Length: 141
Figure 1 (cartoon, rainbow, N blue to C red):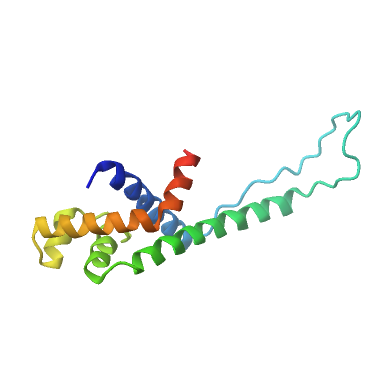
Figure 2: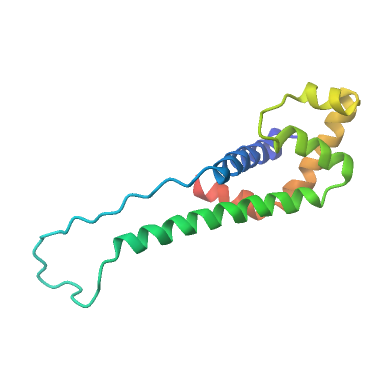
């Protein structure tokens, strides 16, 4: 399997881990701008009302929902894998702590070549299943 396929997926799982961890924490408070601005407006929007607290809360809710959607999408894609492939991906990329390849195939009782073959097959399938998520991440960066 080429690094071109595996690298974006590893980045995706890194972000998944980060979002999963931050989901358990209380979300940080987004600072609001409550100081009035005394700038002279020659011709501005006089019929609009600024609601900084509501805007901050809505932004925080949107961020939380986006993260939950991301987590859900990744988990659903992994659930679609076959059992041996799913075990490898969950142990290697979805646990709270980072775990090396050799720990995974040692715990599963399989050899390195079998592990790599199954991992690569799982990555190929996930690449297809999560193609839109990967494309969105590339456009963000």
